[in-house]
Each structure stands twice: as structure tokens, then as C-alpha cells.
Image 1 (tube, helix red, strand yellow):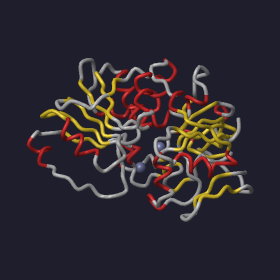
Image 2 (spheres, protein in one colour; image 1 turned 90 degrees about the vertical axis):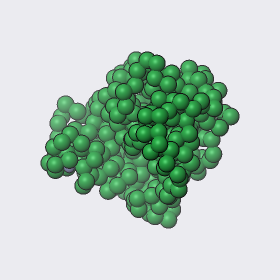
Image 3 (cartoon, rainbow, N blue to C red; image 1 turned 180 degrees about the vertical axis):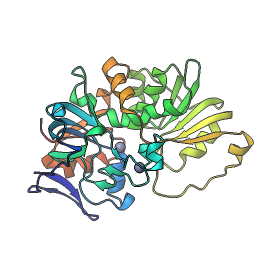
Length: 315
Ligand SMILES: [Zn+2]
Ligand SMILES: [Zn+2]
């Protein structure tokens, strides 16, 4: 089969890899469509030392599984493969399992390939009403929905989202969908009108916000968030940057700010948000590349201001 490979130095398209073989509790999935995310770009800059096939945002169809009911189902899949038996897993925190593998990120080949393998229990069926080009956003949208799991969000909450990239646009929609008054702060001329079309207000952000979400992807995001959050307000960090923060944390102490780290989230609410039309993702797609040009797709995704680049592996 064909798959995009990262060997630590360069990306190449391999054409004659053996097909992966699923274990009894796994499923073999034919990938339809996969999205390039910031993490994938970070991997090609050395993040986590990953080697193999990247790709963790995808939609596809099960072609083989121990559970024959799954065969033929159109699915998306949670990316953390937990052990299921350690204390962390037994506490319901499988996404934090210390020995987890992560699809296309740590210890498991991912979805920029014709076929990929996941634990069957990680899969979620996609409703017929959600097309592939929306379902491919379930993973990043789940990460956006994670904020709602961590912080009470409801009508009247004054929220600011810093960063008008893909994740910021998804987080802003998730917060607005829960009733918050959201202002998206960004600097890409092309993206702010897009936010407005999605019904998200944009602006500079006024100090005194109840909640500030840093989705800037830059080390300066936390300092900007500290300047906007109200006393006893909450900052959610969605940014992982390879590098160190240098900032004055005194405002966090003086204002008794709660700082919450936030990563992967639950798939079910993300699928529901897409099925209901509450979240719209089609405007976030910049281009779709064939798997044969996956290397070119990565180059395009790394250009400044580019939104979601998708790779079509088949159908
Ligand atoms: Zn991602
Ligand atoms: Zn575990």
C-alpha cells in the first residue's frame, strides 16, 4: 500500500509497504480523507521524535475487524490507544494512560496512508448526514469541545479566543454553541471575515473576560491571555509549542487566575455538533490533495495563513 513516511529527516511517499494486519481487538480501516494539523508539521520539525506514518485526523471505512458488525462501517477514531488496565485508565483517564500510543504521533502509524489500524473500541460510527469532508474534522473539533468538559460554559459567559487558526475557529464555534459571548482575536486578514461568516465576532479583546482560550500556537499567547482575563477568571491553554515560555506569572497570582491545560477531547459531542449543523467546518478547508502528492500537501500546509489541507487517500 501507499503511505506517507517520516524518517526523521524527510517525508517520502512509500508505494509498496505491506498492508498492516489488525490484532483481534483492532480494526483495519481504509482511509478516505485525512487532515494535516499543526502537530503533523511539528512532527516534521522533530516534535516527540516520531518516526513512521503521521496523520491522526481522518475518516474511513472498516475493511476488517474481530467484531464483524464493524466491517463496512464508516468511522472516525479516537487517537489515544490506552492500556485499559493501569490506575490512570481505571480512573477513566485513558487519554492520559502513561503507556499510551497515539495514532500518527507516538508509537503507532497513522492515517496518511491507504490503510491504518486502530483498536476497535476507539472507533465511532459517522452518521450518514455527516459527509467525509466534515467527519475529517471530528478529532480537532473534539479537542475544541474538550474546553466545554473542563470549564463551565453557558449563556452570558464572556469568552475570548486568541488565535484565528483552525483550532481557534473551532473553539470559538464550540463556545458560541454553548451560549457564550465569544470574541475571536487574530491577525490573519483572510480569516477574520471567515470567522464573521461563521457568526463569530472578532475584535481586539477587551480586558475583563471570564474565559480566555489561547489557541495562538505561539509562546506569546499566555501573556496575552493574562492581560485579558478578569480576576478569578480562567485561561485555557490549547497551545503546545516546542520551546519554553518566559513570562511574568505575577498577574496570575495577583488576579487568582485558574490556568487549565487542554488537549484531546470527546468524540461524541463533536459528531453531534457536526450532525446538527451547529458547527460548520467546510469554510475551513483550503485544499484537498491526492495521497500521491502528500509531500506537496505538507509544504502547502506549512505556508502562513493556510487553513485545513486534506489528503484524499481513496474512497
Ligand atoms: Zn491534530
Ligand atoms: Zn493505562
